Length: 238
Image (cartoon, rainbow, N blue to C red; front, side, top):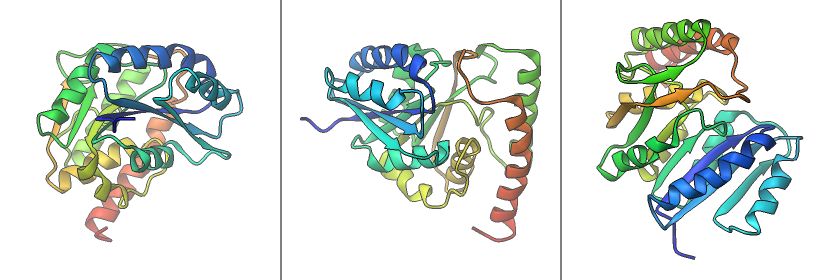
């Protein structure tokens, strides 16, 4: 089989129902971008039949690969593992609920083809088109403001689950990331910028997914993670 240009990663934790839509939509969208792609399902200790569904789906499409974990290891660890296991020179990931409109996938991948090290969708730019509750909106804007303030990031939306990387460039960053769960998205952007990586952020159409597992309380918990990363960078120097 031809080596893929693009490796698309879908993190999964008890998302059997969402996979029924996400897999065929992902295959169709990627097929319009490149004939050489693979889809890695980073399945993180699910017990709802997610792994079995992917195994069955793979019988009809060998471009689908399952990366299974018997016990939950955390979203960040699952992404680290998948990026290292990916065969494509461009690696992207998106949430299984397809909250970010897949019409933006060509732009996400296109930015890496153009020479950017990282590209990321944004729900917080003026042209972004989002629908979510007021509480989540306030929490997200507050969180991202604090990341920009304390960690000197130039990105506006760190937690949008719609990112792509130049795999060769991003691999050295992975070993420095400490967080294993939701803060992973923020940490990789902050550390990449500190290493002068080129990051492209662009507005997306985004809708709250029905099966999303992230809660507003997770955003507030990440306040501690912001301070911890600040300490690592500025005090412990790692």
